Amino acid sequence: MSGFIPAAKPIIGNEEREAVDRVLRSGMVAQGPEVAAFEREFSSHFVQGRPVIAVNSGTAGLHLGLLASGVGPGDEVIVPSFTFAATGNSVVLAGAAPVFADIEWETFTLDPAAVEAALTPRTKGILPVHLYGHPARLRELQEIAARRGIALYEDAAQAHGAALDGRPVGTFGTFGTFSLYPTKNMTSGEGGMIATVDEALARTARLLRNQGMERQYENEIVGFNARMTDIHAAIGRVQLTKVDAWTATRRSNAAFLDANLRGVVTPPVASGAKHVYHQYTIRVPEDRDGFAVALKEEHGVGSGVYYPIPNHRLPSLAGFARDVHLPETERAAREVLSLPVHPSLSQDDLERIVAAVNAVAGAGS
Image (cartoon, rainbow, N blue to C red; front, side, top):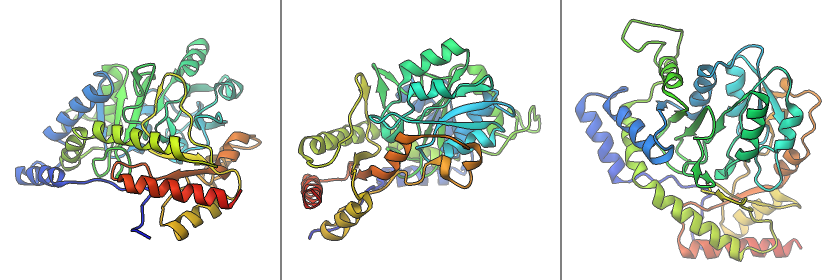
């Protein structure tokens, strides 16, 4: 057997190291000119020039975006349960209640019909997640939000460059947030971005990011320290020049897997959607965990399960989810398995992944 193929592999090159050294030599390592430049470049690259605020994590982006949008005690925000806990956590941290709605089978994203059923007079907004890099059902969710007079927000943590009908995610809602964690499609080492609908919301988010002040010692509101450093921004600026090529490779790798895998359910792509394959997630209806063990131990192929415990069953969030019935969420949590799709894969790696999945699937049939 050749070497182990990991499920994810962050790429940090000499250019990123040189950018960090440049910042360290400058003596300006906290939030400064690199952050401002990164915000401008990210805005132009991903969100059609929307105002962008750099923060120290994707979770901070969600939290501050909700607070800046006026979400607080007494409000409800509809979220998926099948996602990382940061989505629900951010609603709770804003003082509101997450209301968990089911996902649709095809895209692992919020089902508009389930969202309709979850609406109450306390609903402030809808917060879909563009899970695994596939855009949520934004057309339908926008229509629901407009008809009911509520807001649409976007968790685009995994979806840099994803789009629907040619329009990039992060531009449909009042705000959209992106994560820059090391395993995402691009990274700043750690960090996040908030893209806002207008400059007024952006200013509030900037105040919240920086202890509530725009000018030193002139604190206008109570805020946080959620700033991004120039060190992190310098890494992100370099990654921004590479992410399109990496995304093209991810999509090419996914197309190869689509064409050659047998015996498993490959990820469908909705009409008009551009999937950026943060994860390439198949379904294994029978003994998913045994399938993953066989891939690793018999074939040296890594995989990941995102997410085995839905948010509504986590001890931290279960108190917000009494008497919810989310059958597609539960089904996905049992069946999903993410295969390597990252841009470091060689053609030999891809062929090994295909051979391994097809062998394990065949053995279990």
